[in-house]
Amino acid sequence: MRVLIGSNADQVARIAADNVLAGLAEHGAGQRQVLGLATGSSPLGLYRELGKAVSESRADFSEALGFALDEYIGIPDTHEQSYRQTLINEVCNVIGLRAENLSVPQGTGASVPAVQAAADAYDAAIKASGGIQVQILGIGANGHLGFNEPGSALTSRTRIKRLAAKTREDNARFFAGIEHVPTHCVTQGLGTILDADRLVLVATGAGKADAIAAAVEGPLSAACPGSVLQLHRDAVVVLDEAAASKLTQREYYDDAAAGISEENLVIV
Image (cartoon, rainbow, N blue to C red; front, side, top):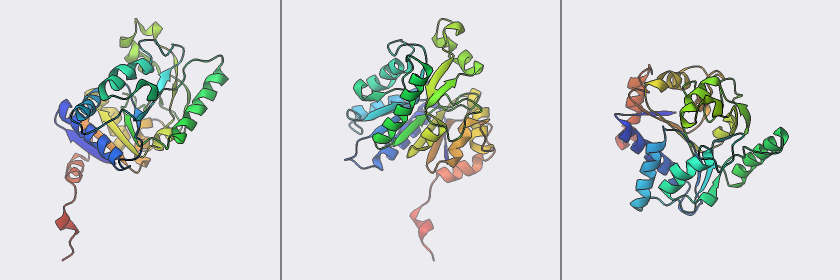
């Protein structure tokens, strides 16, 4: 895991975007890009930086595929607070990803088994695409990734989940009151997330400091779903000073971020 700390929100966004673009570049220019997309306030600056890269001809997402992390159950995908509409507004319209190339878990169906069957098909569709090359992530104050709340199995796949009370409270600001916030969702599982070739997690603000400390330096535990990043071969965690404030190994992270020079490779 690499932990990269920016001095302000703009620098965090640039660092995160650079790591997304570098992860995509590892797959070569001829391979179709496949992005995993998170909603929330944390990655908004990252998406703006990717849009800037497109405007400067450093990136092109017009043929890319996008897979959302999650979707609410019980509201249509045309609802303004559905994650489909959120991603169209905050990602597709910003980076030039075509809306028809955006896949979002299905949050409606005739029955619970029908919704779960669609969730299984979503997992299969990710695999059929060749797999997510770079998965963009935020983290909840309780350590959730996607809507994998504390207690989620570390090997879980896309499925129906009950939202924690804290998560519903945090999201109530987007609705006309907490009574209008859905109680359930469909989310990529932690195992699904771990299948991505690179993970880029963005967190800013003191409200995320405890979750980041638990995810990065705490024990691997379902009590903090974000700790599953410790299992990934290429996880990049990009933070501002406030989100990094409770990390105990800060000096090492800063040293490691400096990288290795060619002279270090020479044996005298």
